Amino acid sequence: MLTVFSDKHALHDAKTELYGGELVPPFECPVRAEHILQRVNEVGLGDVITPHQYNIDAITRIHDPEFLHFLETCWDDWTASGYKGEAIATCWPARGMQQRIPDHIEGKLGYYALAAETAISNGTWKAARASVDVALTAQSAIRDGAREAFALCRPPGHHAAGDMFGGYCFINNAAVAAQGFIDQGASRVALLDVDFHHGNGSQAIFYDRDDVMFLSLHGDPRDAFPHFLGYADELGQGAGEGFNHNYPLGPGTHFKTWNAALADACHKIRNYGPDALVISLGVDTFEHDPISFFKLTSDDFKRYGKTLASLGLPTLFIMEGGYAVEEIGINTVNVLQGYEGS
Image (tube, rainbow, N blue to C red; front, side, top):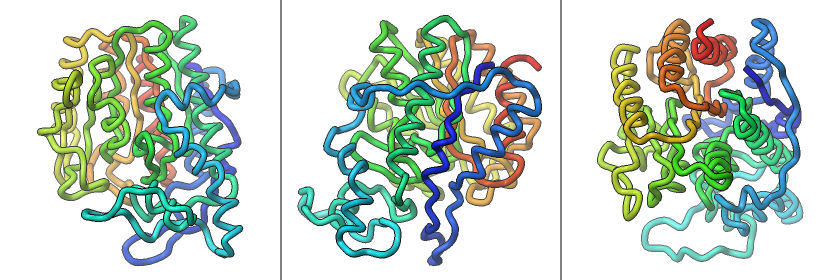
């Protein structure tokens, strides 16, 4: 299986995360990608290539240009204002407040932020642009005839909405890639999110569309981030009604229950009949992941990789979450090897 990877991911190396009332080193850190790449090479998964550079027009098909300009200029604006730490949102346009974009960077951060855990630092924009280039390069390989490809993206993307960042995500790599398939002639694309956390950004982007079916298996939002999206009764709206499917699962979920939800999602995908399948591949469903509560074992990842292969679709794997435990590499590659039948 082809892997696409950029060492520019390391340009996003924030030092600060607000977690449990403390400022801690971020769980989403450069070593995550290095663990995965090391495992890809150890098992000889296939060729590893660097990405092509793509025009921003592919990204503006999904994201608001003003939001992208904010991401590009945020760090310079932040430091120009005299702030010494990393750029972290501290205020939001909460219920009953004006939804206007302020001029000051503190207000802009709050307007565009989903949550306060995600810091923007020097290099964040360049890393996010390289990450989406990774996704588009892997997507192009499938367009050109490959049956599967792995985009080793970092930063991840599935929490990023059209004009909102957070959950360690800035540009929605999976959504941009899915749109790429549509723009190149696909009539339908399925986007299946198996990350522990609900892909709120992907859902919001495609919620009123019927050409991209979104399906997500995730921690119940009553108990898990992002908390305010991901319920089972969110089925889409307008043209998208019936094309959004959520499977919220509770604390302590083991593979048997998780796999039953996957089987139902795969049944819906088969009935939908897409031209391509995009997998938002998060392996934070692992039993020892530091910020999640599912109980999948390393062997379970290989098992469900085989299930994904049974769909018989051109499949693009986009790396999302799964945090800096050594098994992140084993678990990610297990999915890909299971898909390949090895």
